[in-house]
Length: 159
Image (cartoon, rainbow, N blue to C red):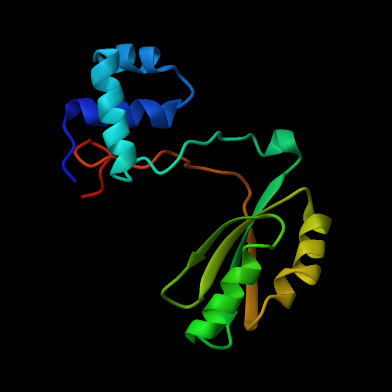
């Protein structure tokens, strides 16, 4: 999609703080409220804006670590992938799960209160997921970069 300057300003603003009122958003991006609302609705209808959510402070909720878990399955058939993905969606602590191309089949990010919490999740859930052949875990020491998605046509767009 091609985005003009007002679209880019709207997308940057709502990624920074989607809770502002329409009037505040319109003022911030330099548009009338009605023009801003039309553009916002178009971006929603086109699927550019998928949903709105809040970013919660994990440590304030008691999650002191993120563990990145690489999982290799014993089979890459459609049935095996489907069974794994359905079970992974119900696994406690899993906040992200990606199908990979490469050495491992999946990469998960699991938030945990401490290493005992991760051990429990590993024993009771991760190791029991269907078709799991190998699990490799890495504990994150701290986040280094966490940012919003780059918008095409801006300086942060990958080139």
